[in-house]
Length: 259
Image (cartoon, rainbow, N blue to C red; front, side):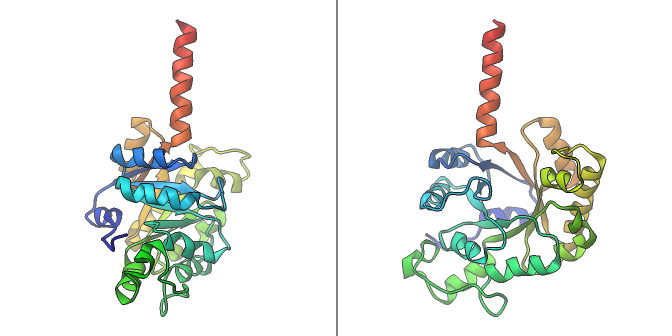
């Protein structure tokens, strides 16, 4: 693996909007297709589609070969998972359900080497070329290029949103409208509820104030994509692999049955 600049970070730094999607299928082919289709990033979900085997490494390798930045969403409260994802070459990580400054600081600590953080050192990993690229250059690259993200998905976080987004080392936040809806007591995802929409706008404002980026699942409807891009979402998640397949099949079935 080459210690090259993170093209996702570079594009965002130039003020450009980036596009991605979500991989739930655990197929390296899907990840490769994401790159060939021109997506900037692919979020590999291990929070709700968890597999404790070597499958994640294969998906990351496929992303690196396909030219799409792999961002791995991991479970919270397991700091070692941050290190493991970064060691296998993830171009970014996301930790869910961050509600306080202290929790955001813990994510940064797990992702960065000392003195900023507490990440354990080993060059015997893919991102360090299995030792061939280990050392000070790799440490500096590891602390500066992978993007460190958190999820804002609970009403509790809104009391501290500006302080959370201002934490040094956090690069972006993924807003989760589904769990935010649940935290409001709505009983199901209701993205269009005004309280959810208000929280999205508040999170965008806090991110912009701190010079950080915001990601949101906006689906594949052109009107939705434009709406959230205009609001200031600069990391647009265009649906998911399984969602796209399901929608295409449903549409085809409806056409066939109607014919």
